[in-house]
Length: 108
Image (cartoon, rainbow, N blue to C red):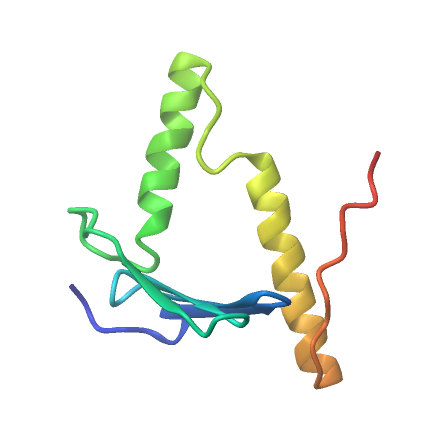
């Protein structure tokens, strides 16, 4: 695997705990704020070299396969919308200097 880059880690804090994901370590750490339990989920390497962000390779393959088969891509549009919402909340949190809650989807 290549060197870790600045964007290789991401985390989120919510009412029930914290989640930290590390691309360079292939793991997701979940911390339950109620119990203090820490669970580490290791993911096997994808078998593909990491250039930029490794997940994009699998996403592109899935998208192409969805065009060929008609199956929904992974991630789907809703996952993308949620990722954008989380990114916008993180940017707003940085601007305000305090946590910004992710609000429920206002659409019907």
